[in-house]
Amino acid sequence: MKKTIIEMNRIEIYLVTLILMVGFTNNTQAQKSKKPNVIVVLADDIGVGDISHYRKLHSNHIVLETPHIDNLASQGMMFTDAHASAALCATSRYSIMTGNSCYRSTEPWGVWGGYSQSAIQDDQLTLGRLMQKANYQTAFFGKWHLGTGFPQKDDPKTIFVPKRGSKEARAPVDISRILRGPKQFGFDYSLTLPAGIQGMPYAIYENHDWLPLRKNSTIKVIEKAYMTSIGVDHFSREGYGDSNWNPSEIGPLLANKAVDYIAQNANKKDPFFMYYCSQAVHTPHAAPVELNGVKIKGTTPSKHIDMIKELDVQVGMLVDALKAQGIYENTVIIFTSDNGGLHTDGDTWNAHHEPSDIYRGAKNDPFEGGHRVPFIVVWPNVVEKNTSSNKPIIGLDIMATLAGITKQKVGKKVAQDSHNLVPVFKQIKGAKTHDFLMIQGGARKEYAINDKGWKLILQVNKKTKDYLTAKPVSLFNLNDNITEDDMKDYINNPAYQEKVQELLEKYKKTIKSKVYLGNHKLK
Image (cartoon, rainbow, N blue to C red):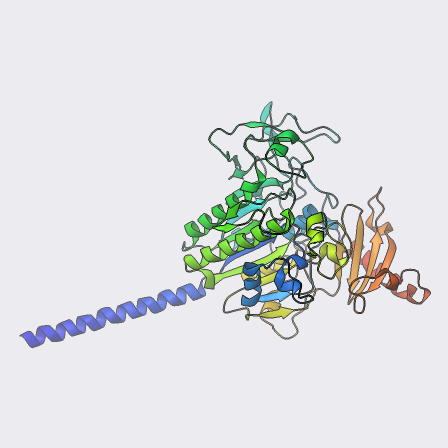
């Protein structure tokens, strides 16, 4: 009898073990087959020279190491010929969000304020809407800067529209909630800075409701005297905001809320998509004393470089959160910037830190330094570690790339200028990107076309803003003049007039044939 019982126990143990093994195998297979989580990190005003991994390609003089962002590069693929679609943030962000070049927008130039009307159309495909269609939980964190709708004070259901030339400091607008923002454009959760840390309203919003920074916070007009009293410089316009507004607190708030979001959504049935738009390193340069146990403020040669250090720590927090939740291996991380770096800080200059690395110009310029940006992708077990690509890409390629990751197709009239980079990530032979680049300059309204290294800079008419009447102003061969040295500007050289006309015609043909269309729906 005992023998029978022992045999039965052995059989039971075997069966239980078999069931556990099958369950573990099925669970592992399910995890592997599950769509990856996706995090896109968009830095604000970061140039290639701000990231030490990029800077080391051309120099041994490193003022600040960026270990967390460098680690992304070592764990994945870095692009050495990546560009923002514009040398200014708002227009560049429109392109990333929609996959369309700036000239397709109804508002293709300038910088939009916190109360501006959005250039994104109601039926237009956005990153959030694309990922929602793939059954992702979607989240937006940080600087929106795409136009935000707030209610009028006297009519809570009507969106306030500022009058051209009016003073907005005490406008008849209710900033306690958002009527039109990330929620309407495909994001289930949002922690929003309508115009970043530099513009009104000086407040932050969670799921479109004002998030008071303190229990005693009220809405008041934030004046320059107040900002000066808390040690904040680069403040230009008074306007409504949180009475306890302090830009040095915003980065930690964004990063910690993002870490919480990862923890809450790590192992749900549906994967998540996070679009994390850091406030760093835009002015005002007001870094926190410390973040995640790392001292920041005053630890580098300048307030500007302090902010770069803060950004690096933010990236490290996101990666650590993924690893803590056991989902790092099933997450795609893309890191890039909205435009080139800043050349506005004297202390940064004196420290010989080069935000644009070897490239000419900076943010707002049509030169390479104005739009060359870092672009790094990590996708464990898909993208080979410590690889690089010199293929020309643009930030707006993120749209088609996310469609590729989630195995979706977008119509030809939707993200018209976006290229799927997944074949490049996988190093598939013959993988293509852009035949030529079309890059918009900044406030001076220049445009540039780069065809296999031949770069023509054009001046668009500042009054009419008509792209087709743009005049050629510079011609460089980046293949032997990557620094765009004026001594090799061939614009007035008779021997190169044929090349000028060739590029000008290609530019005009592109503008004419690819106009803004109203149909923005998926196939």
